[in-house]
Image (cartoon, rainbow, N blue to C red; front, top):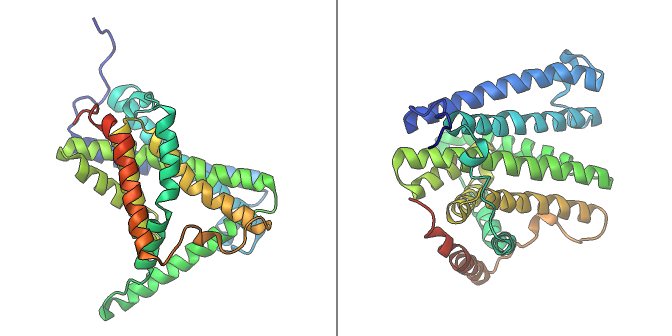
Length: 310
């Protein structure tokens, strides 16, 4: 006989769970942000007013430290805490609910590693297509705002990626690669994709909706398409493997490789622009890489897919 207590919110419908999860995200982010704001003063030795006034000055080294601090706070408050709390409320176990207690075999992780690099030409081609996007004339104001937002985000990213030492490299791997890989996969694949699937009853629609929201939340419009396609790929990696650790690993490779290539380029170990790694104008190679990626996915993950419910 199973004497375990039922989940606290076991009676909620799937749509009600989505609304509750949204409230959790808002509440957790607000609480962690204000707690982080209160702690930032003593940590950095400046007043709260000075923090708010200098956040836009990315030329100031202290501002960069503060922004990195809030980036870490955001990973926990916006992604990790809400997903873990939702897992507890819905199943009394975050690990079970988020499929963290189902590690996959080494072959799955090796295939995911190969996959992330094999798809680079296809992803970079999507970046080129996305960047060539033009809005109608009557939306010129919106297009200008999108370009300005994109330039500001790119400038901040470039500043974050300045790594004069191994210590900064390790910190960036945690801040830019590890925490976002864990947090964003917790929220978008582990929680949201599951809830949308339960609500609509179609895993493929759930994967694309979660990927769309995953890309939209980044507010980087000229990278929307490739980021959404990465989200779709992470969604299928989760669905086919049954373990959230697999898309977390793929997400970490995607973000972490950019950090490592940037570091190697800055210290003379790589020539050229690290952002162009894997880029090509050869459409045949792009199509070939896409087919190779698809074949690899089908070969390694399809058998596991048959074992997954729904």
